[in-house]
Image (cartoon, rainbow, N blue to C red; front, side, top):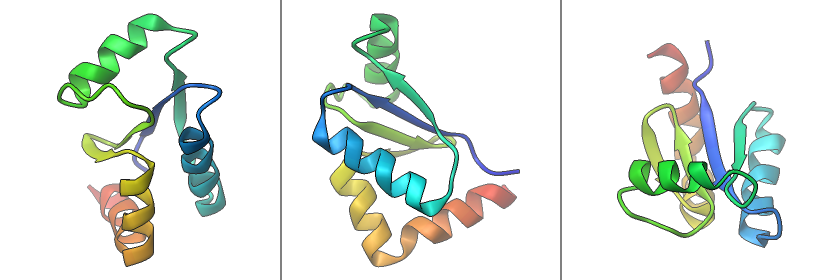
Amino acid sequence: MPPEITLYTKGYCPHCKAARALLAAKGVRFVNHDIDITPARRREMIARAGGRTTVPQIFIADFHVGGNSDLTALNTSGTLDALLKNKQTA
């Protein structure tokens, strides 16, 4: 079973759009929480992200990836695919 991937985003954020596009290109399903639409999700995001308030904040299962630049770096290094694979078998 694939890991649950969760993104906390804002609709107008170009970094959020880029993160969603990368994950969509990988063919993985993810849950997207727009924190402008649901303010309670903002508090949830800050708690899960250790106080970070910027978007996007990305989680693969319980692993906090960080933002879009962190996701892109994982993808560039090849670590993202390995992380997705490892989390699928965990």
